[in-house]
Amino acid sequence: MRGTEVFSTDSRRSGPEVGRPPAPYRANLWKTPPSPFRALIIGAILTAWLTWPTIGRPASAARFDTGDGRLSVWNVAWVAHALISDPRHLFDANIFHPHQNTLAYSEANLVAGAMAVPVYAITRNPVAAHNSVVYAAMVLSFFAMWALVRRLTGDDAVGLVSATAFTFAPFVAARTAHIQLLMIFVFPVVMLAWHRFLDAPGVRRGIVLGLSLALAALACGYYGIFAGLAIGLAAVWFAWPRRRLPRYWIGLLAAVVVAVAIVAPVLQPYLELRDRVGVRQSTDVEELRRYSADWRAYLTSPSRAHEWIHERVGLGKEVLFPGFALTAIVLAGVVAIRRSRAADLKVRATYANVLFYVFLGVLAVWASFGPDAGLYSWLNSALPIMSFLRAPARLGIVVVFAMAIVAGFVLARLLPTRRREAIALVLTSIVAVDVSASPWPLERVPPLPAAYARLQQLPRAPVVELHFPYRSGELYPHTTYMFWSAWHWHPLVNGYSDYIPADFRKIAGPINGFPDPTSLEIMRVRDVRYVLIHWNTYDDAGREEMRSRFGPYTDSIRLLLDDGEVSLYEIVSYPPRR
Image (cartoon, rainbow, N blue to C red; front, side, top):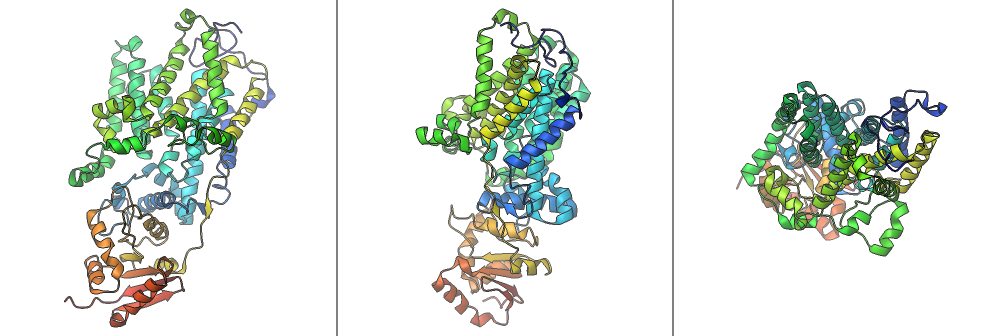
């Protein structure tokens, strides 16, 4: 291969001769079935393998071992439940009763919840609904990334390698407890819409671009902002040849208007919360530093193939290593470019695309190091919406995204035409093994406790679950109560989120005195009817003390169920106020 032929002239085609479309591939392996269907099947198989046992035990495996994992299952199930039963009160989630708009106390995960609707409607199983979303999101990410790389390079085969490197990156495997961070498909979807717009700027394609940006924002707040920044950079980067085209700027305006019109109603509860109680009104620099990347983060991975790195350099603050295979492919492209004549490369249309994604990746690395590195502080001061973010290190997924696209360009140019498909399949397998963290750290979910099964049959009324955690930093046990509430959907006084209401903290200690006058008054104000006591959360002395309090209230509090571990009580009547 001549040094000047690193990238092809046409951004949508590549081949052995510069400026000409490639000859049709001869390998029978790629003749049938059609390539999109083929890519979809490969993505489905890889997802089943690399996220096992997500699809192997869809109704009984979850991140039940972590508060964030339980919160994710509850969140997805609540959105699916509300969309089916009462969409008008979607944001009035069943936590922190009697507060309203409590879904806005943390990430709403509206796209994940909407994706869960079919499975939830059929099974009414929150775990199955959640896992169906995880699997579908990974397959969609693989397919969209393949489609994006194929569009940019004109090559069916190399897109499989890029899609594998991006979809199953160590960043993703390390975030199995955060459903919003698994919605990475939004990046290739947004950039597909962008390149389609770039081919023929106009209002219609601008509207599609705006819809894709809205999808990203509703899927994950972080990703919506990151995707918006990427499109902003692209709009400037590719503007020069089109600077005098009114349809280019009008189309971009249409994209902004559509995205804002869709996202604004969803953003409103968050803005109201910020105005009312000051949530995310200003940036906490120390918090940003705590969740910023360090150099070790880009060498940290949950993959078994990367364990030896940690033994030598230690663990970073985050998991951002892109993998050996992807890094090697990108470096091979750098070497090829250095051996090329720069003057020739600069006149190639594809080179502008390659350089854009290289620049995007470099900026993402820079910003991921947080306020001390400078760029993130500038972005934070220039864009008020950045105050909603607290983890600059999450820009690491943009780094992997950019690297995977550059790798697609490199492979499309460097791989020989003959046997290209077979080589691409081998490279896909190598990348999959390199990043594999399978099995994902999912645990078997216990059977539905009898108390919650009984609550399913009772009239809807507020519930309190005890012990009621109250110390800051020790509130995660509330997510267990939220998880099981997804089977009965009674309003909970308990709750956990990014924002904890002030009155919740005020009652959290005294309510543990149940049954006594103070705790009963707290429950009376909130119309509590059912109380669950988890006896395994108390020591022997605590259990004896609590049982001794019931004597004066035998006429007011009725035992509905006691299986030895959990007791379910109904407050039949409240004693007169003193």
